[in-house]
Image 1 (cartoon, rainbow, N blue to C red):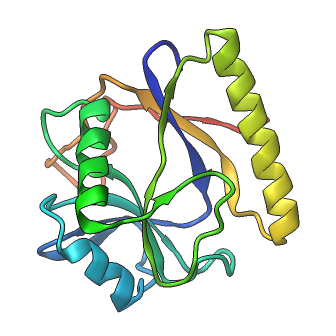
Image 2: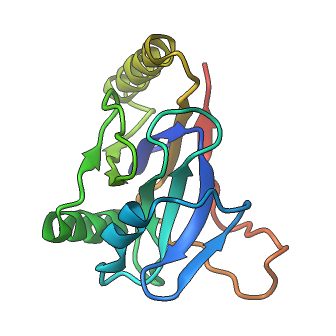
Length: 178
């Protein structure tokens, strides 16, 4: 992960990139998020959002959308999260933190934290969060949390318009599962 990384929990869900103005482009078949959750994001000034839809893999937060990132060219990950945080405040989107069980048919912005796993404090935080997520999975009776994901805070969103079947080698998300 390294110095200057953003970190957030990975949840079991379906990945998509809904447009706040033009509908949705799903990376896997859409789970039909609720109209309530879709309406929450339709007022956003950010056209494309990188989201997770809660529907099929467990019964937690059915019909809800969780915003992971904004698909905005030429903004770093830190700047995109700042933009999303401002939208969340303006549009009253709740922030989803580790330990908060999402309600059904809601829209959330997933909380991200800047840290470094190269420092002891970062390593301790990652271990603490991982242990907390495992306890919550047991308490909730579902594998809601999969692990932790990180990206460099100075990374740009990897937009490639050549071919939807092609991968984008310019951005790697690191996923941990102890």
